[in-house]
Length: 480
Image: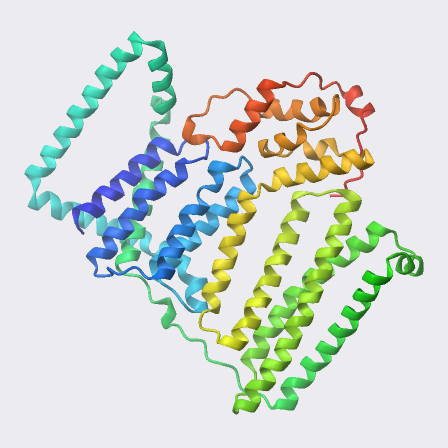
């Protein structure tokens, strides 16, 4: 292990100890930079010099996903973004191309945690034995630097209040009681960087795992169930198109359902139908006949038809959710599941393209689409979209669920600021109290929270009286 790997891992540990304490913002991105450097130096030492396009795409995508917590105040899309970033990091380190590689790559990081720590310890011992004088010199230089910064920083802070305020914002607020937790953060950053370095230098070859294809079936045995399923899909889609162009009134009169009941009843079944269709395609490919060009054309024709009909089901499911949102408003669950349904539709399109151009690229394309979806979902500010949708709905119908909207994050404040009083204060009052005073450091706060604080400072809520809020049009018809 060369010196660059050790210093980059040490920098990752120090930044984790200093920056990752209370909140999440740009600090995750800053910690990830030296960790990425650790992996790069280790890969170069191991002879993996040339970075492939997919490796660069995974690495850049992972770093971009870590910017979501710096932009959005809501924790739930940030959690999705961070989890996806870890998955992309595992793909970048392993260079996986196949389905087993894409799915199992994160396990390689877990396997490298003890191996990376042992590898790092051996590297430190080797470096200390070969260059004890250089190590001692470096430690003395760091000690002198720390003393000079501490002494002169304290003097300048006492001499000027503006400099003291700037210093308090830039330097983390630490105490003796934080010591054990800071050490844990240091260890997590250090060992995580060493695990990434070990994976980059000696990745597990997940692509070597091969799944044997299932026993090929005859054309009739294979095609009959799928053709019947395609016919069922075609009938359902024809009815959906007839309802779409003919209007919902006749259907509602015939079924006795309300508009919202019709919408709510359909979406979940159609979402499940989409998932099951993907499962059917997986097993159909496993047992597909493989006798020659005629069999290949049959497989492409039948599965291509099934995929095309499934896309209509996806569109119908999205339309059902749109109807339900019109009736009851947008929630986190609803925006999440409709996003998942749209992504499933994209996966079906990729499967159709793979049937024409070959499927070697399909695993990485599906993983890339999932990462792009997680990034777009976080940057789009789902809490802001929920607030925007329900503000527009309130302006039209005067129906509004105060209790639900009060549980949104600071990302919702710009849209909620458009409400008229006293509804505006009824909503923003509890949100302002949840934010509390601005005590977080610059690296622990998101841009969404900064913007929300600025709005609330310029136009603070005036009242949160329960009676005034009830009379302003509160509704409990959200059915979340």
